[in-house]
Length: 389
Image 1 (tube, rainbow, N blue to C red):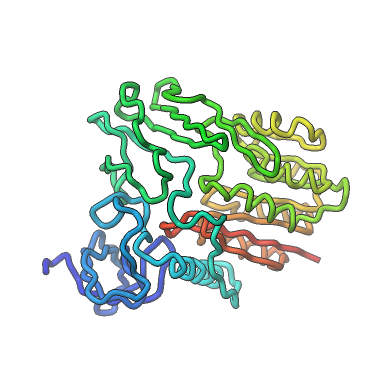
Image 2 (cartoon, rainbow, N blue to C red):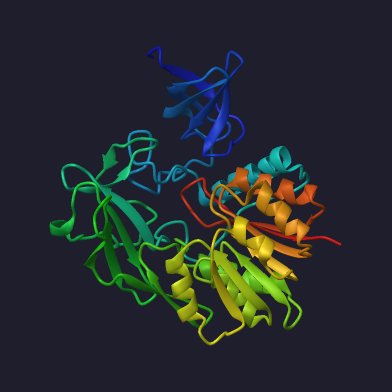
């Protein structure tokens, strides 16, 4: 065993896909290990307070370990499916435990016993309908290795449905391109290339992809944001419609609203909606998709700037980026006196910090759900209903 290798016993799961282990009292975050396993791990970084490592040999496996469901992930592979070796039910328990821990540590919210819920009925593989690749200097597209510029050009990721990346139009790919591939709700594949300093190019299909939720159709750019899991948009839309409960004709906010997925759910529940996002492409797609709902208005601006000028709302939905809404936005929402909030987060620590911010502003958590919206990975989607008297 080399000087860069350790024998470690993994303990509790940590946010980010690692497990916590200790070496002579030092904390070591170990990727590719499960709680209770003894592993031979290679140290990948050393910091003053803790180290990072990755398990390269499993000496005593957990009963929850299975043959990896992604053939290209792992210590020597791509950074895509960092939990593909965990039984799906066990992975969902781990994810729930991580969210509960983050809520306790960062949000001051204890007592939550959480297990991530499956999204849809399709299982842990083949769920992703949109993916982004990078083209290397040799002209081949690939996935990045974990925290690396190096690419893995074997594209057989377990998240992808069969054929999604088959026979990509290699003759139009250029080194440095970001290649966006989408399988839309019509079953059509669209391939769009975007390179730094280059015009966006449609390599296959169209620039606009078709997405459908609850009988409504969106046509939005392949490069724009939409949920990656084929069933996620419908799942979250239905949950927002169930939890929002706006009084008929009452004002509602859809903050970080993108193409208006939740604006549609709020409007169809009877609210007058303002949807705020910085994406002009998203707003254009939303205006077209919701043209029959004149009670929806799209504002292209940052939420931080816009929220103070909005009509007070009876209910607000916030779906911020991975970094979360943050203190300034939460304080502005609280100052506006919004009595009912639905907050959505795709990163456990940011979500927990935001929940802590709401609780400091006087809100209480009424309901909380965690979704396994990114199977085979450590990522989750969290949704909370918050109210204030």
